[in-house]
Length: 351
Image 1 (cartoon, one colour):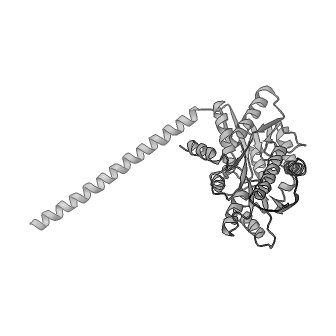
Image 2: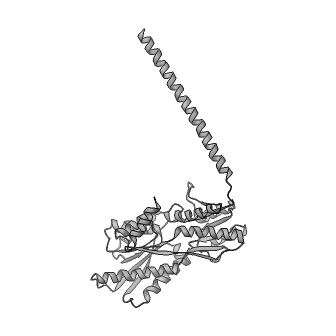
């Protein structure tokens, strides 16, 4: 009798458990549908006045993420939505392919990391002819029908690199070195070496080294081609530098990826203190490298402000029919003298 009663109780327990689970699932499903419907309704209620797209060569990098945040935030202020095209796509597309996608979707404006190639010029002109204003970003397409260019003062960056190189040599002399020459290598890639910006940076660097009362040493500048297709290929190219017998005294980087890869290579090959690195951008990794004296200094541009300028330029053009031809962002050199300030600033921005 007790066994039958126990069996009946167990069946009732299982039945109640199944029913409770079923009820919880139903409630969860209804709640989810209500939430999704409410979310969709809220999104549908908000209609932006304009839609812009941003196109870069590496949408997932922290550099371009910061530029995009500036453009997006400024857009939200003006009821404009900015999309970083390619950041959520499963495949990697070139800037030219992303331009084709953007033109076919006919946004109200395009911000693009451009170059001086004929293919880029054709796409910018096609967008312009289709009624889509284009702002070239960071690199220009000078002969195209773009409405504005948002970039950096390349000559000033070259000058700052030149000043830093002089300082490195003078610091070594104060520490007892008798070296009167410097072997300088500028890291670049085949695409970048054809850009007007690259030429301007190098021009500023060379002119600064060749002039001034403190120029009493000889120097040799070479260019190291780095495959920037992805982080792995860049890392392999940079490691080849340390496989040679003669390693440059000073290495100059012109993008975030090369700076990060070079920093890691110097540590791995035990060359800290033997090679001076002049970096680019102010990611947490690069700031940490300066703190630990692995990177001598880095050139930091106001990426957030650069993004804001892009949205401002398209807004002016769409509302007034014209805009400024050039927008230039500010440049800051970060080294051991001000690294504490910038680390604190980085920490506060993450809170």
